Image (tube, rainbow, N blue to C red; front, side, top):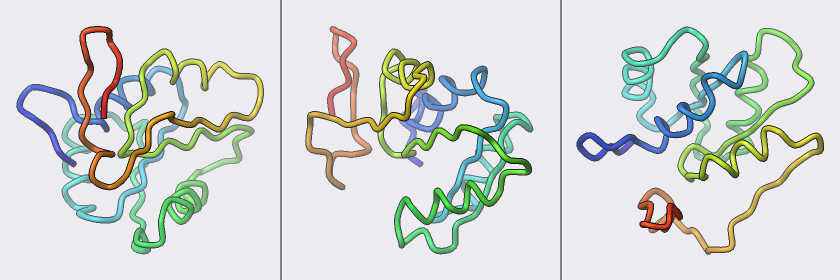
Length: 128
C-alpha cells in the first residue's frame, strides 16, 4: 500500500466511500499482509473483516472466494471492488444504488505500470 504524505491511499478513499454504506466490509490481502493488517487495525473500526489470501498470486477471483467464505452470514448482495483501482465517488454510489447486477469498466487501458498511480485533475476527473 502506497501513501504519499498527507494524501489518502486508494484503500483509504475506497473505505471512506464504504464505511457508512455497508454492514460488513471484507478486505482480502495477500502480499505484505502483515503491513495491511497493522494499518487497518490502527485506523479502522471492527466493521472490517480482514482475510489473508495465501494464494493471492492466482488473481482477483481467488480473493473474491476468500472474502465470501469469510462472511459470517449469507448476504443477498456482494460488491466486489478491486483494491488497486480508484473509482470516483459518484460512480461508486451509482453502483451501490443500482437495482440490477453491475459490471464496471474503464475507457482507459490500465496496466501494471499505471493502475496504482493516479491524480485528480482540476475538473475532478481521475487520471491514471
